[in-house]
Amino acid sequence: MPVPTSSADNHRAHPPRYPQDDAENRLLENWQEAGHNRWAFSHMEEVTAHARIPAAPVPAQATLRLGALVEEVPDLVVRLEESYTDSLVILQRGELVAEYYRAGAGEYQPHLLMSVSKSLCALVAGALEFEKKLEIDAPVVYYVPELADSVYGEATVRQVLDMLVTVDYDETYVDPNSEVQRHDRSAGWRPQQPGDPSNTSDFLTSLRGAGNYGQRFQYCSASTDVLAWVIERASTMRYAEALGVYLWQKLGAERDATITVDNVGFGFANGGISCTARDLAKVGQVLLSGGQAPGGRVVSEAWVAEVFAGGNPEAMTGEGFTEQFPRGSYTRQWWCTGTERGIISGIGIHGQNLWIDPSQELVIVKLSSWPEPDTAHWHQLQTQLLMELTEAAARLS
Image (cartoon, rainbow, N blue to C red; front, top):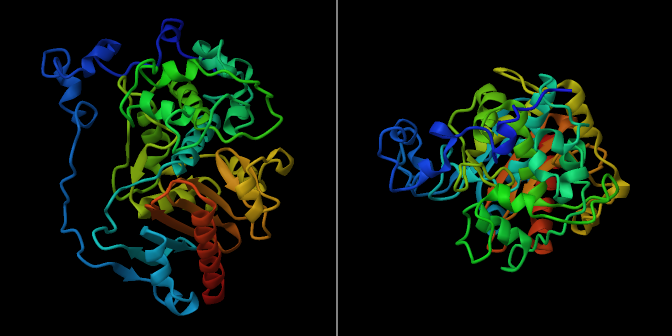
């Protein structure tokens, strides 16, 4: 079994991030001072709020490069607009075959991935397993002993990957009393309230629940952040650094990705990544290539095969998903449709989707800004359009 970080590191919330591993280095009053400025001057996006300075003019009109899909899918452009699509990218057999960007967006515009970020986190875990730095059947506490008293104290890394841990965690995005909003507040996504944990690790160690390890699926954003904490310990890197080394730098990405961080620099792995639609499509291509990327292997072929094989449909409890896909399952932070085509998907609220059809080597990225985070109406519209695009691509190939 891989050896985790040193005993000294095990008393810290995370591996070293800042000079002298001192979280106070992030505070506004001392970032310009000696001993702090060496790190801060190259990480200003983590010190204070930022505005993006575009490298090229923002398109005033929607960008349409949809080719024959316009004829194959009725009212395609209207449906993209009505489903609040910000960008659409379609790859087939590794080639870019169609793009759409709304007015004010473009191919180099980064977009928040929300929970598609979870699928990327799992690929980093798979990369560490491939390099024998992570044992996924090991207990979570082997890497993160701070979680011993939490609901994750008896979980394995595999159970966290597959979200087979029962947690007292309400994922109701619009309820300010839900755990998911408390999680957001701890991570700096919302203003903190009295009594909130001060950062993500403090929030994760506070979670309790029945456990039911390995028995039933529970979609829980906290489980992804637990996985990211394990990744930090196994890699001895900050999560953002591990994401770069083990995935992003191998993709042949055209642009940097970003991830939001909490007040001690822990990346919000469950939903905080932003990147371009084109670069996200390259992530899908890695799976279609059996785990291989232009810059080297990311995960093993066996890892990819297990993702496409799907999880246990009997453990699936996501009623909205199984209404659309009765044989659907979840494994390694991917939604698996259980259809004949074997389609898998990374899904995020407000309409983010990384859709992969191995039967025709097809990747569809649809990034959106739905007015509501998570309703049956929007998911049905999205899934129907993705299915129609899939069938159209098959007819045209």
